[in-house]
Image 1 (cartoon, rainbow, N blue to C red):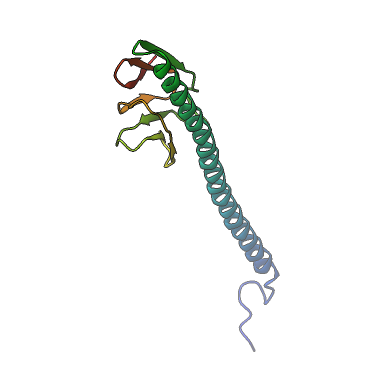
Image 2: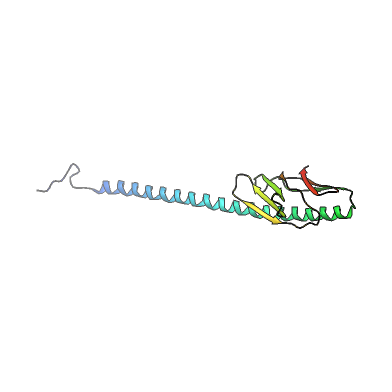
Length: 152
């Protein structure tokens, strides 16, 4: 006679328990994969939002530098103080504005806690001294020499 075992040859209980454990395991793996995928998607979308907002701010700063340049040329050697109104953060991140740091005529915006950096070119006839300010309002000044940026 065949060995029947302690359950008398009935293995239906084992099948149900094993099936339940496998189903729970597969469901847990699927939920974990979904959470990781959604997390990376949210991070990608946040980086896109930061980049878009930094590009808009950079274009505004470049336009404000051009406006300060026009005022400086029209002042005939007088002094100019041009206030730049910029947001303090973009998509919840603080950022820095580096203007003409390498002498290349660029505004470089760099967001904190994000790998996003945006570069926007500007053109002025008046020389611009390189400088870095924190995101938010700042001032462009001119005292007969070159345009300078400083925190407001």
